[in-house]
Image (cartoon, rainbow, N blue to C red; front, side):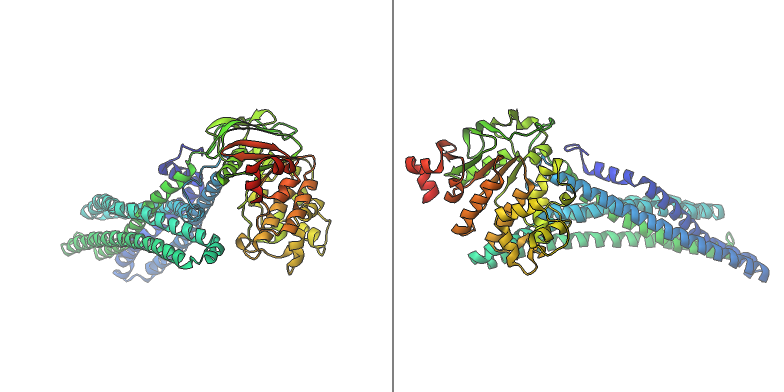
Length: 603
């Protein structure tokens, strides 16, 4: 599904079509079950008229065998049909979850705009599950139609008035059930919105727990979540009330409908139009109809919730990308020369800058907004309002975003560590098996935060020196350059030690060293790092600066920082002042000659 083309109806249609085979199989088996269920009271009526009333033991035994075979057939058809239906629902939900994740991870971005991570997680789980459940609901609806149709046909053959009551009354009940489901659909959408927002706020607060504790703002955070949670609870209760009203009213209408059938059947039996067996069959069918009619009430509720969730899913899938265009492959080989011409975006205001291939360039800023905007441009998370950014003479807007991310890795200051071992956070999954060719520069996206939590056992041994297997020299060098090997040695199980969600078991400086090691391990042709050592002590920072220079020798590296230790090892330093290039030279030259640089870097 391409961005901008989805609506809630499209999502539902594709979800059902994708499982059409299973839904069809489940519907066919379920219809067999419903036909069998409808035949049971009919057969009981026949037994009463032919065997019980006539006191014929032979016929009674024969019809009991027929009933037994009928029960076995309807039992197995139900089991197999329900299995197909449940599988179709789960498969559809899984397929939809994959589509949502692909859209969120799309190199063009845009899906996360205006949404907290917890909200996207809620859409990918709860909403996808509700949309998938529509397959089961449709299949169950077909079962119910088959049961009602079979009942109506037999009643018509037995008594035209009874058959007409079923045939004419059922569409009216369905229409009323649809009308009653409208409030539930609206309130279900509001419920999911509130629940997703509450999940997003919770995830946001947990991610910033250390900062909140440092500021002493725990109580304010608790109050914020309490308000959000109460709003979610209120929306959930409104949806529950709407569902209970809808279910109760439909059941009341259904009960009245069944009572009408029983009343008419009783009167027909009294005046001799029906035999005793036929009356028993009619009453049995009336009671059987409770099941299909209740199923219709459940189907209406499921469809209402599915439509609401499908609309939310469609909003994510149809989100406009943050960057557009770009189909050309990245130059091969990548020399790594970056050029900015008249770039204007937020902080930068007409920046002209040449970043020479194969050199380490430091960029100091007087305004943090300039650094953030520059990083977004270089990583092509967004395109400049005016001007252009080029890689080896090719504008980034012409390059495929995914290929560009593999060639130009922007390691953000606040990148994420994942739950798993330290080694698994450094070594991209599967790269241990592929150490040449594209793997030398690939996996950039994974290196910037999407590594797997497993698949790095070899790295564990490489860094810790205790596991079996061949050492991963790239990982070992990256860990040493970032001084993350010291972090590994300080942990109970070395690099095999779990770091916890978000790396919460590590200190701020340790997390920064692991993040830098991950970026160095990826080894892209162009590496852009942002403030990689702000939480590291001065001695370790100086060692990291030397390690960074050595491991990246001959490849384009850009360090956006005001750290004197990192700027001192750069081949060239650029000062961005007021959104423009204010000065250029080496760190020593700028310290001597530029007061603004001294203030930004040494103050």
